[in-house]
Image (tube, rainbow, N blue to C red; front, side, top):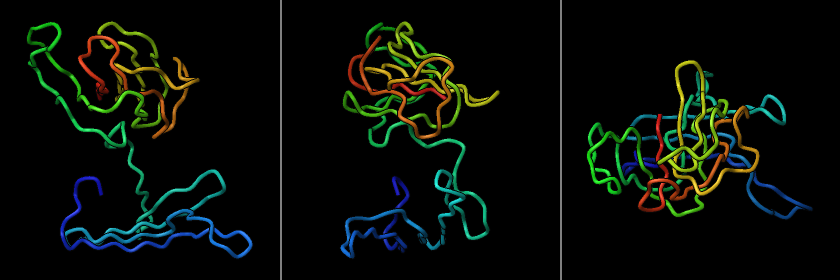
Length: 183
């Protein structure tokens, strides 16, 4: 829904409604969903293994969970893209910008895009407060210029996909509040 919604798309949802003594008090989980995007039907059904583990699956039974989230913050705009040669606004020289900058207010929660282990949660030169996460033997992500780390985040800690690990800031060599994200 973030980028690909088109005119005439349709969706249907089956949602739990919560009651106390016969009176509605709110909404629960989406149990099933259909989304028709440019004529293509997408379906999702919630399947719970137990109280702790559940997920959404397509009609053929395949999991809809991806290895990585598309973005480490829920809302924000891209203020600077990956580039092999970008003019650095503080250093006043051209150098590689090996990540994507998301402009967002200071304090905006930053989520890890995938499950893994924290390998660094410390001040890291021009990156300021930085978190690096090793996801497997191939992938590592980095989150720079944070205002602070979420409590309990330190090297060696295991994190789950979507877990808040820190908060947008402007630490290190930064001209304004943003998250510098590297994959």
